[in-house]
Image 1 (cartoon, helix red, strand yellow):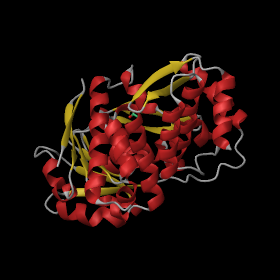
Image 2: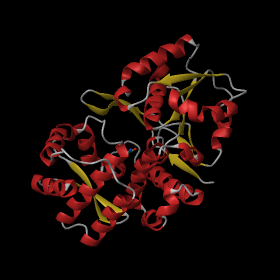
Image 3: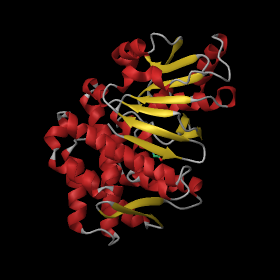
Image 4: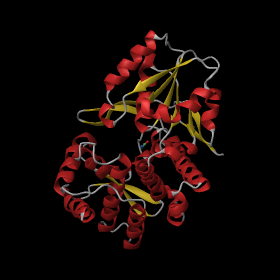
Length: 357
Ligand code: GLY
């Protein structure tokens, strides 16, 4: 099974895609490590913990629980976990294993970044979205009332252990939400991945092993390549935000409660694709092909009651934090995107309105 090297100024590590890798978790804990802390949620541990416990049978460790849910992705639960770590003898030689979905990966990584000014973390993502995106690349953090991920750190993991087998028990809605991030990878950088998603819909939705393994591997390959070229999002890494400009606005507009992140990104990708067509940088045929693929892995929850003007208002509000400019990642063709600023408000409104219909 493939392994992808991520090379950043901070460190070099492997993102390994392998069925059964969770059974070898102990092999990724350095012999010199002190206390081992597994950070997870009750729910994830109930479903997946037995295998990890078996792998860690000879490794003294303590399991720490996060509350789970976007509304609990805040600093306070991390402070509580850090207190537990100190009481349990944690020190600078300790290590965190972040075992769960994207929220656990982000929070466990941030806990490791802060604890004693930084200890190692091994990422074990258990949702598709976390496997193809959140766990690779070192972005960690929590939300503020003002917005998502507004405090955090780039803290690269020691290793990312991706076991596609865990997806067999993932709720179907969560799996499909992850597939939208896979479509994103295809549109920004991989016509091959796009084609796989188009031609093997049935296999992908039925979790046929070879199809799932290939789509995860290709997405992780792309993520590793992009992060290796640009760890801190100074340039190339921004392409990973395709669909996220409008997607984040949709999540905020619905109080983070109506759409899963991947679903909001699906809507954002369709809006961005239409902006690209309206701006004359993408053909109508390519726009249709991208939107058809997104729809094929839908539906996303109903969009009733959402006003295009409100979404635009949120984008404009975001301008303040982006030096006055909204950035869009717009496709030029399948497998190639460019970052564009200065899209006029009427074009944005028309595109969003068309996708709200
Ligand atoms: N999720 C986007 C990134 O890692 O940059």
